[in-house]
Figure: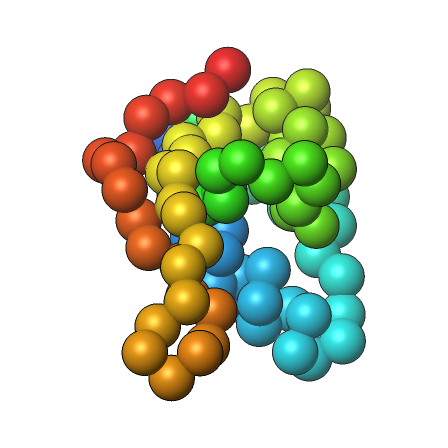
Length: 104
């Protein structure tokens, strides 16, 4: 059980790529609205950051609906563009290109 002082200032820093992959692997969904609400009720939530990498030059990403929803619902998105390439074994890989930048 977590205990917070009602006047405690809080910030969320979510590693979106790993959390998304873990939730998918465990076959459950994360209710980000309730997550944000939970911390808002425990103290003074100053910010909620969601860090993720997005593939460049891709028309559709499975993360896009989630990223758009989070941005619309009060999360600050910090994204890092990646490019997909094929390694010497013929496997698709993602490569980070730039430092993180705020997207809002």
